[in-house]
Length: 430
Ligand code: MEV
Image (tube, rainbow, N blue to C red; front, side):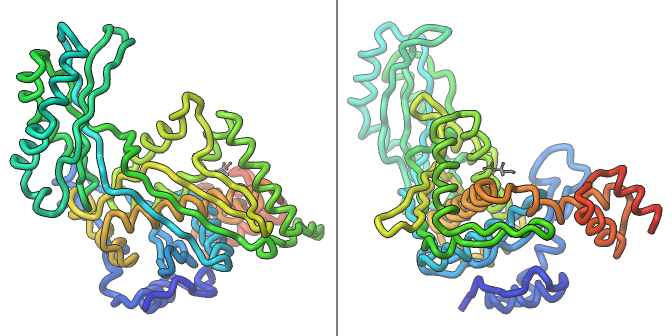
């Protein structure tokens, strides 16, 4: 059985980490090979145009995650230091409160058809609704493979856009259950097939036929409860120590959330911190992170005012409770998920069996990451945690290699001067 608790993982060598990971996930070392030699240019040639090579990013493991009572080792692809450590640490605190409880809706995507040149928009809308059953059957008959997997056309909706730069027009929404796919291709195909039917029914001209990335029918939600005592810690800054009680940290996180709830300038950064957790898992599993980003920010602005995607509050016992609910259109079949061997290995590592399960893990990581950022910001600031890995990157940029990377980096951290010119100077003296 998988365990996501691997104490001391950080201190192991690469080989030791891989061996421990295989052990903890009940996988063979062979199952992890795609993580070390993931994508060949030959395969990449079949994914996008004009390929000349591939581009690698660090892949680390988010530890300690317990999602709906199940231990999950989370593959995270990201270039930014502190993210994986932050998420893992917060997942450890969340375990003390039972881990993350996550839910998700049916995988319903929205396809949009823009209908122009209508003499009577209201009448056209009524006519579309009057033909709803016929339209749904038509989609399911033409796209029968999705239907046979339990998905298919669920609803037709109409919206009249009254005010636009070209005046009023009609929008038809196809609500489409795409099961375990991300579903962009399925929705777009269905919309293109529906278009002539909509033209026949309305007498108008169907212009755009495309999915919406504001997938607010395909949502995932995670909550966690951190016992207030777990939040207490002592910050160390050189020889100065600064103790924080659990109540200090909890109230600091709630005040930080309040800032994001009320101010779009702060909300953008707050939500970026959430996406620091979300995107790495979306990328590791071969999913479309631009689609997830678009959905997240559009959803955050749904009231007309851009705001926080998460909520932080205290419960009756004084524990810290976090909730994150957002659109989450990810798949485990089709697209890059299928052809990218590392994406396959990532799904295997998490033992994910459905797109819903994947969405629930991802949103839990987003919540953990948000808590990591708020905790740091509300207490010692984020720079201290950031420094050691950032200093190593600066050391490498200054030309250090091998053992010199660590030497140059630790001297800069000690001096609290992490700059490329200082790294170059230290390197010369070494
Ligand atoms: C940095 O990548 C993310 C943070 O700015 C998020 C936040 O401010 O909440 C630390």
